[in-house]
Amino acid sequence: MARAKPIIRPCPGCGRNYEYRRASGRYFELCEHCRQPDCVICGQKVPIERGHKNTCSIACERDKHRTAQLVFNSKRMAEDPDFYKRRHEKTRQARERDPAKMAAYLQKERERHAKRSRDPAYVAQRREYHARHYQKNREQILQQRREFYAALPLEEKEKRYIIARVRSREWRRAKIEEMRQDPEAWQTYQEAQREVRRKIAREKALAKLMKQTQELLNVADRDESE
Image 1: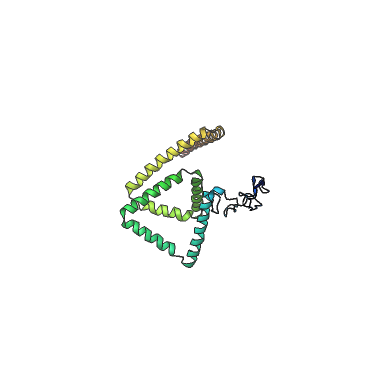
Image 2 (image 1 turned 60 degrees about the horizontal axis):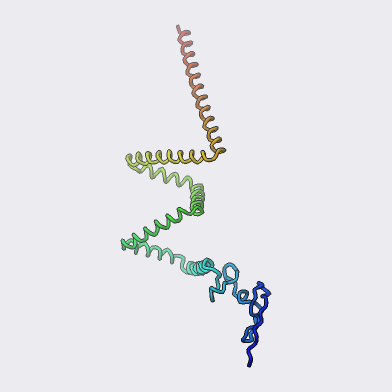
């Protein structure tokens, strides 16, 4: 039996030329690209080179596994709310018993923190979170700080005071240098500084005038008494 002659035509879905009828006699209404399944995460077509996978990329595959893990964790938490607390405590105790595990854990945490610190989005997110947390718990945080500082030895207080002054000066220098790069901000800063100097001069002049007035009143009182 003679084999059927393949028929090539454009795919009605994407326009690619494909074998509408193959030599085996099978017919396909769409090309092999359009016959691929949709990605379970983003809905795009799964590339042919990904074989039998149901995700279109490594990122979507990662999201699929993360979603499945979240569903699994949610079910487990519903069945046993303290499961992960017990597992975390068990892992922590195992690290504390094994110095090698503890050292590896601390090194991994340092590397993770260093990597996150270089991510501007993460830094901004943490800054926003800490600002909200401080505003919500301001009185409690300040009370804890006062109690902690009051319990410090005098030497430690002096040491912290010196460190705070150094950091404050460094921050001020960095802030001034940042404003120098922005002409508008630098002009606003200079005007604010001039206003501060004018206010100080007025206060000094007023204090001097009040002192002179008091001296004149004292002289007048002495003259009247004589």
